[in-house]
Length: 83
Image (cartoon, rainbow, N blue to C red):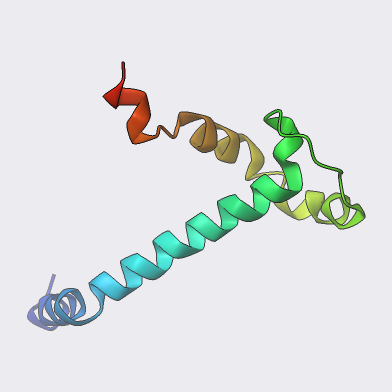
């Protein structure tokens, strides 16, 4: 790792690391919300399956197993506060 690379990473971390991290978290949250609205019946949330959800299924099928695990793994503060 050269000096120029180290300086570049330092300024990236100082200037834009936090906004980039915030945008990525927001993107992940919106993606989870989209999948919940479209495929919530996989988790037991009744919703009419829209026609467009079936059209998007070939593009999103790889994300579904990881999405189900992440949604079912999430815990609210009330889960650990009242255990």
